[in-house]
Every structure is written in C-alpha cells, then in structure tokens.
Image (cartoon, rainbow, N blue to C red):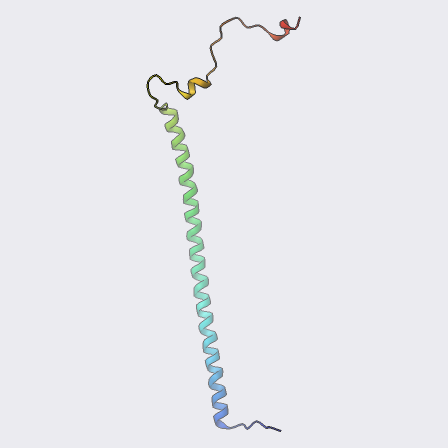
Length: 103
C-alpha cells in the first residue's frame, strides 16, 4: 500500500497552509467584527431618526390643530361653510317633552 513520506518539504508545506488558514480566519473575524460594529451604529442612527420622525409628526399635528383653531377655513363668498352645515338649526318653538306626546 501507499505510505506517506514525512519530509521536511511536506512539513513546511503543511505548516505554511495552516498559517495561511489561520491568517484567513483572523481576517474573517476582523471583517465580521467591523460589520457588527457598523450594524450597531446604523441601528442607533435609525432609532434616532425614527424618534425624530415621530416627534416631528406629533408637532406637525399639534401645530395644524392650533392653526385650524385660530383661522377658520377660507371659502369663496356665497358658498356655505362646512361648519355651517353641521351646526344645528336654532329652535323655532317651545320644548315639548316626549312623555307628553305619549298621552
């Protein structure tokens, strides 16, 4: 059968390949660590941006409500305002309770 011959050249080649393998493993770990740190920074930035977005949206809603309260909607003359259509008509007669109508 075939028998492996252990020579100085074969040992040197084997140790050289092991060194290359460990160097590649170390480089891969450094790249993975860098990617992990960058992902954490991006996640924190995304969290800050999301928080800012919701704060601005809330402030926009508050300001829009204040402006709506301060300024009535502008309409052309002669057209009824939307708020007029929803206002109840003033009472024309006296109040009559329903209990008196059942008799």
